[in-house]
Length: 419
Image (cartoon, rainbow, N blue to C red):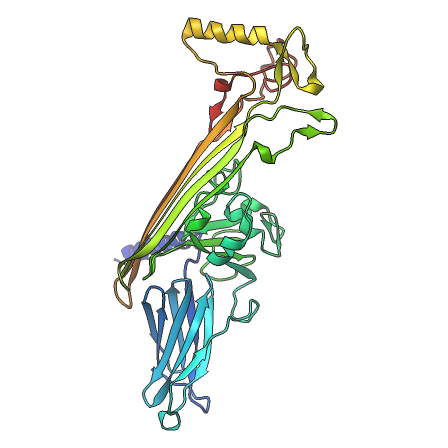
């Protein structure tokens, strides 16, 4: 029996260790101390915090030292907080906004009811960014800031650059691959190691679906562990008691790019970027059940090779992008492959590549009761990126002196592949 107990304890410890690995914060909190006018603690005082947009309630009681703590709260706000105790006047604090992964501190005193004729209403102010309650240097980015801040790629990486300690995606002097990135607590690191530090070519979830982003440069919060470098935590939007949404589009084309480099002029192949998206959130049951959905579609057209095949009148001229293969040779090979094998090579010059992408996110939030909250989220990201033929060469081939992307070669559009 003792051996069984030891084995059970060991398995439990291993399970807890695995669960704690790579943790991230997805909620906020409130803590503080409630005292009477003389500074003595008020044990048993009731603290009720209400998330005004959704009516979600959180509560706690002070202990023998007058201390209380409410964790697992929705980031954002505004919140209204009521503090009550028998024989004392109620005190209310309003317009409180909670930052992701941080605890808002409320230390206040209650006046005896016999000396207070009216309810006391206090309008809260944002705590300073640097204070004794913070667990390491950090910066928070709200959904409102995401809306007004310019973004080139509409990616989380565009926003983490706001961190003063960041040099691009390198935060605090570390390598960008050391950053631990989560969305609603789920890991969003590019563990494969090829490409950017994020999957989905750097934007797996639409910025319009994010509510807050927290960048923790050197976190020593026990809730964040199992990684090195900085911690970047993001949470998605939730529905509220009011319907809200947006429809948006972004675009650009080759007209925004030049085609002159010094005295040289090159051909501008067609290129464009088009994004269309929509989001909608609101109540299913007021104060009880909420929904949020976001759909985004992208289509990128990027130019293919700028070079052209040579002709008798335009012999190979590498500085002017005239390649060694001739128009006659490229047409003959294409026709032979089509007649013999039914294979369409596609054009070999003057073409562009299309890269489609879609993103979808849906979330349901359920206020079961004052002590239990439930949410479920589904997200999907699909993208195709065109890749040109490999630059590798065979040591046994002496046809050309360079690789398949050199000026000694040209490739057909259909010889590439999608990643």
